[in-house]
Length: 267
Ligand SMILES: CCCCCCC/C=C/C(=O)SCCNC(=O)CCNC(=O)[C@H](O)C(C)(C)COP(=O)(O)OP(=O)(O)OC[C@H]1O[C@@H](n2cnc3c(N)ncnc32)[C@H](O)[C@@H]1OP(=O)(O)O
Ligand SMILES: NC(=O)C1=CN([C@@H]2O[C@H](COP(=O)(O)OP(=O)(O)OC[C@H]3O[C@@H](n4cnc5c(N)ncnc54)[C@H](OP(=O)(O)O)[C@@H]3O)[C@@H](O)[C@H]2O)C=CC1
Image (tube, rainbow, N blue to C red):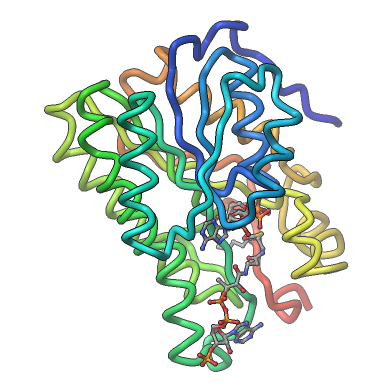
């Protein structure tokens, strides 16, 4: 079965100003393109100008997209980029999507490797969210943090990343409580296997042979556009009473054998 992803009204995000980290590829690009298509204006963040610009060339309306080159692990750069974006356009939605990790058993993760993944997947999201807060509070906006399917059960080969994303879940729920008074909502979306080139490059055949065929009860990958539709839903009026949630979009992977990055998990 293939994915039918476009279910929202054409103007579902009209008037929304959004910031998407990692907008130059994969899931972040799909989210950006869908938000623009639904009427939002989006600033993309990432380290590579070329890929960020390419996202703009694919957008339904290039006038409603711009980008900032910024390493989200660089606090000063984040504060400046988010400040410029908020001052220019306001901020009704932040999507913390930039992230990633290498796959290794915990015994293969050095102190430096641990730090790199925690910095990218936990600390950077905290930094971006804090920089965005004044603008989100002004707009009564929301945050969507891109997490992992099965983050609450664990995943072999992902100790650093699961630890970071579990931290994000705790942060999401705590800020959902603290910022409800400002009308700011925060949610997590946990994709299962999404066939982006980043994943294929890192995991090769393991993706189809194990993650999809054995780890996913519905036996297919999640399309990036399906993740994008869910993010748009959460950002718009239909999501107005949803906060502090983790929504898994993974074909049931978190209920079945789960997704693991060490092939021995499926032996
Ligand atoms: C609950 C389970 C769910 C499972 C399903 C979820 C499937 C998930 C899919 C995805 O996330 S798709 C995206 C996949 N692609 C990526 O994730 C690639 C992204 N990688 C990166 O962004 C970077 O490699 C990094 C991980 C952020 C590291 O970047 P950095 O520039 O900081 O790296 P380095 O300076 O090169 O190295 C820092 C440190 O890390 C060690 N290291 C790097 N790679 C490996 C490796 N393959 N194995 C072991 N260690 C590694 C490196 O040696 C350095 O450590 P020290 O030398 O300082 O000790
Ligand atoms: N693909 C999958 O199956 C799944 C993915 N995820 C998560 O979804 C998110 C997107 O993944 P996916 O689209 O597959 O992967 P990609 O590698 O395509 O996307 C990651 C994006 O983040 C950006 N990025 C990485 N590091 C930094 C940084 N330090 N500063 C700014 N931007 C950065 C990259 O751009 P640039 O290099 O230009 O900076 C890139 O555009 C990640 O958090 C990933 O872990 C979760 C579950 C499953």
